[in-house]
Length: 241
Image (cartoon, rainbow, N blue to C red; front, top):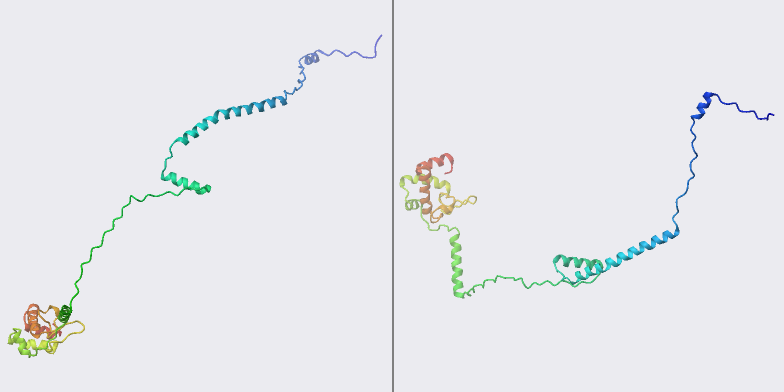
């Protein structure tokens, strides 16, 4: 008797060998979730951390107090920096701090005394009159003393020691320098006297005295030109000497 299912034909040899070489991969294992953090474990961890903090505070607290008390027992060192720092902190925090007292007793100031002035005697009326007369005389001597003695040109040349052979040369020069006026003065240069000596102060005696003026002129003519004749020749060529 035969059923309605037809038998499957057996594979051939090549197909059978190929099917034997195929590896069968097992299915992956199902994923299992890890253990979850339970509420009990969280409470235990919080209590442990709190206990550790309290233990550390109990250990460090007495040590800090001992250090602070030791610092408080030490004497305070007062320095300029500490004073300034304390004043700055007092100002910044609004606190009150006693103002420092500066001791200036170690400073000595030496003041040089002024010399006592020498008393000046009060002049009497007699001495005052004599001093005034002396001052007037000195002021008159300091200024130019004009000549008022009189005389002639020949008398003055003779008194000055000029040789008569030179009188003509002297008369020519003096006539053109001063016109034989013993008190002649050049307002611009200050030359004075018969020969217009410049400066007038170089004449020994008085520059306005005709005899003193001619004596100086003789020394000037001989010393500069060699003689009165040579001085006359220079004057006629240059109109000065």
